[in-house]
Image (cartoon, rainbow, N blue to C red; front, side, top):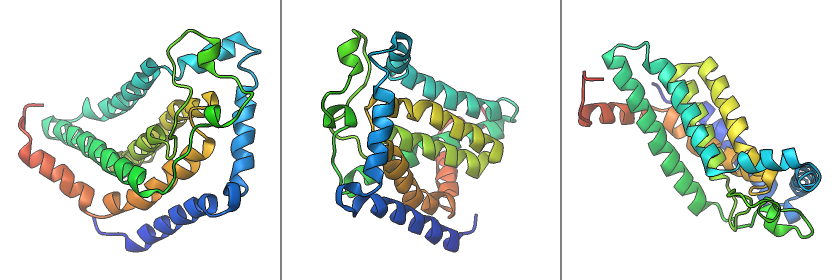
Length: 233
């Protein structure tokens, strides 16, 4: 793939603009009222609706996180099953490349973004926490929630789907992202901007240099060259 420098620069500029629109203003400008409104909207019903409380608890349990991996795996499996042995191996190599990119970009974002803040369930007082209302293992708080690592991984997955498998796969990837990332916002383990600003800006800045240059193709080729099992998948 040829390097698409103008588009890379445009996406990087969008990512930087998004991040600094949140980071620079006092109290995060217009973003904080939005964050607060979203948190309190979802938090309000926890003590009033038992079914809603259980829904939020279940969708933030570790088992639900595993379901996100199953969903991503099923989407990749839909391309693996009809392929010949070489094509199946390539799907696996793309999956490994996606995992590597997600790990590297997440680590860089965590270390380079000059932000440390607790989740809204900790930051606000006089609010409800699922862990106080139910005796059920669930993640409803974080001492350092920015950027949202779970949302970042899902966005990277969706982007890799677009790069290698097309727009339909990307649309399904975005659906997976919404289903599995936003329960964290509903329960108060993440602010809305942890994902909409933190995760998205990191992806807009880091991922284009991987997917819009020959880099990701070279990583796929390296995995294919050095990992065992050629022609056995």
